[in-house]
Length: 240
Image 1: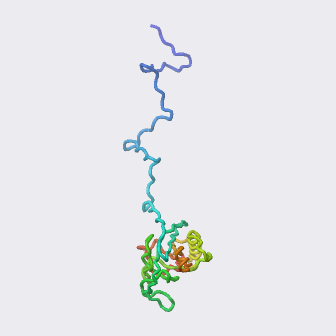
Image 2: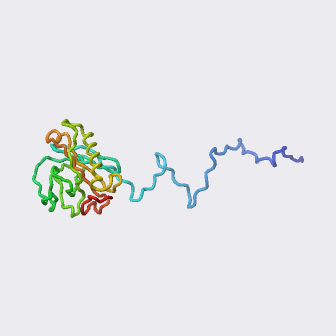
């Protein structure tokens, strides 16, 4: 029996012979998988579309933005809702029925007894409840004294100066938004982007512009952090 000498510089004994039928299969090109984590098993494959879903933020994911749309009638109003520098325009209609207001005002014009007030008669400092839903036709609002709980408060009323011809809804809402945001600081005491409060506005539509010579914009402030969405007292000078 002859002895076997390893080849020079081989470092030792020969490797184990390959299995019958051929050579060893190649190893994985990207390495072997790690051991499974404690607790047993690898995590499930990610869902189609790539990646695992992120955990929801405290309080859950935000709701979808409000829908946009128009409204019909002789006198219509748009509500423009301004949030975190983004404007979502939500249609709210106003029907031109000139019923007398039944809210009572004092000599200075402040509401001292709640009641209905026409959207045409809203004034700076008026407080009211039940902001209409998108697309709902509205002729009056539920005004209350600002010393009572309320959802919203008028902080500016003005006419836009965009000529005699209807300039288009985009131009009207852009002007309404710009001026409401500019007037916000003078009422609240902080610029809109510094404030925790929200604002929205009413502005004319083509029918009211042409048929009623309507140029009026009504700017409204509200406190989204208030309990049940209602504030007691005026937000004038709130500085928050």
